[in-house]
Each structure stands twice: as structure tokens, then as C-alpha cells.
Length: 135
Image (cartoon, rainbow, N blue to C red):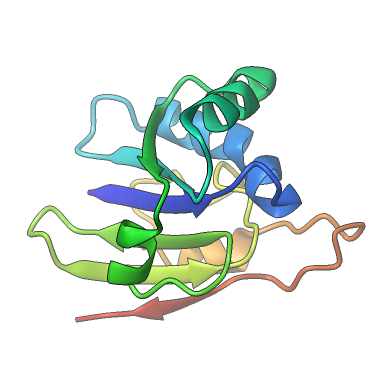
């Protein structure tokens, strides 16, 4: 599976979730799971500097002209799409979840458990993300 995460360095919720995305990827090492952090509409230098400041060590994909962002149907940041091993869209979500919170990396928990266990920083005043399931 691939979790495609669209982000930008000027987006506080995007930056806030990066450490937990990295912990999720590390926690699922050895499983068929990968995080692709797609930077939207920024220069490579700006994207790399933002990730370096956060200590993010995962893969960064650059989308300077928003081609991937629009092709995927994303409209806001952050936006996430979980692509199954068969290449089909399984889930999509908006909002800043904590990816490594209870139940998220539990192999027996379905991906929508992320919604139930998501923690949102009240200072950011964002809603808990809602997953849309695709069959």
C-alpha cells in the first residue's frame, strides 16, 4: 500500500503531521506499506529545507506545477490517499490526524480506525479527518 500525502511548507497542519507519518512508516517497516510525501507548488530547495528542519527522512516527491495534486482530485492541504497493493484507491482523508496513535498501526485494525483514534491539536482548530472508503 502507498499513502500519498500532499503537503506544503506553508501549511502548519501538513508540517505537524510529518513526524507521525514518519513514525507510522517506521512502525510498518517490513510490511507492504510506503509513504509518499508529495510537496505541492514549491521549489525543491524549500521542500527539502522544510523536511530537514523537521528531521523527516522519508521519500519526498515534488509536484511544482500541481499536476499530481489535480490528477488525484485533491483540493486542500493536507490531503491523503491510501492506494492498495492492487493500485485501487482505498481511502482518502482531509485533516491532520496523528498517524501513529492507538489503533493506526495495529495490523488487525482497518484503515478507518485512523478516524476513531485521530488526535487533533486544539490550537490548530481543525476538525478530525473523515475517511471516505472506496470499494
